[in-house]
Image 1 (tube, rainbow, N blue to C red):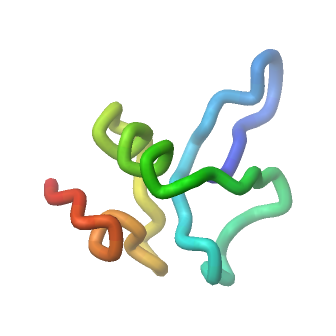
Image 2 (image 1 turned 135 degrees about the vertical axis):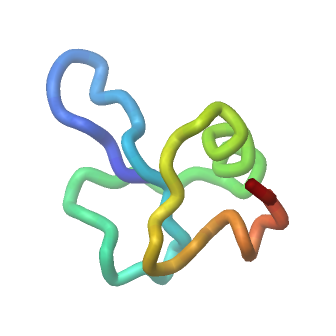
Length: 58
């Protein structure tokens, strides 16, 4: 998960662990947390497409 800047550093984007496009403000999360973030509307990286490997559609 890539984190934003500012107070609370909210999540801004979900990446797969191997993604080369992940920025420096990142934190490792487990598969269930990634699914939850994607379901809550957090953007999925367009390079690694974590929703595909996690089985999250739409």
